[in-house]
Length: 264
Image 1 (cartoon, rainbow, N blue to C red):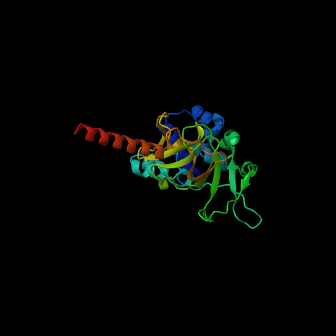
Image 2 (tube, rainbow, N blue to C red):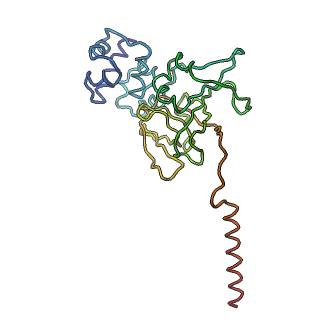
Image 3 (spheres, rainbow, N blue to C red):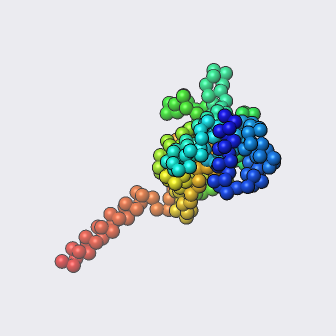
């Protein structure tokens, strides 16, 4: 395991064109530790391994158990590893006294804290949790609720709670479906997701005033598929509802027919 990890780290670092100093800054350790890792004199703790795997966009299994150097000429093989996401991370969950899994809630004000503590069971345990008696939520799956802020996914309003299902294997992302993504650069975002073969996710807002943009899978920490939402405010009636628009169209048709009749 030590030799594979050391070789993989050195290969991945050089593939990105990073010095050991730059690599150390990326994962928050000193340069001497990077040297120790690459020379096989030390092995990172699990948390550091996760950070390294997340940064390079490979699974923990690939990082410590596969020879990634052999895949340098096999883009499809390495891309497959990237798109698996973080399969082997044990998701931190909370259960009730009956051993039934509870839904952990991430309020908008806790977004920054979640970005740092999403993999820490002690941190996750500090978040609110609840249960929902909905038959549509399968007992064998893991759910989490994220409160969103902003208008990029209107008509879902700012402040709504998005109920999500954990996506363990990122091959299972379905194009055009709404997801919560936990990203290194933007934190928690709620978008429609499209998986690109290049190793990028295209993120699209429902509000047309926001432009579509891409994020490399290596910058993604977690993926959660949206399955519903809870909102404590009722929508205001639209200025022009579909019913009203239909009535206006029918009235215009009647007027046009009347004008045609007079012209005859």
